[in-house]
Image (cartoon, helix red, strand yellow):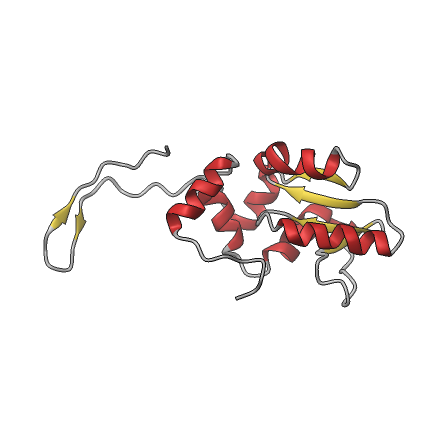
Length: 160
């Protein structure tokens, strides 16, 4: 297992996402799209998209010669690596794109206010282009039938 990943349960992940006020369904849907970082970078940057250098895997693109990093997954170690690499390349800042909740609760304070990055939010239009719909899944209001023929009818769960 890579050093920047720790094993956690679904409950741990849900609590983490709630701590940062990130809608779990949205972040997980984004991360479930193959190559979501590159696709979102292309959607957001449009004709300004430039692929990152092959020797800079922590970058998702270059925007006007500046490293551009998608932060839907909140991999803070990846951002830190991008900041350090950019500085070693003589660049004072990087560009981050994140969900509004991520920018407000973590990224603005840690990166924008310290001068390490320009932080932009991913728009609903960009998310719709990637995902189709950004509405959370609403299961049908029907009982669940188990393989043994039993019926489970559980009221909807509410976030803590």
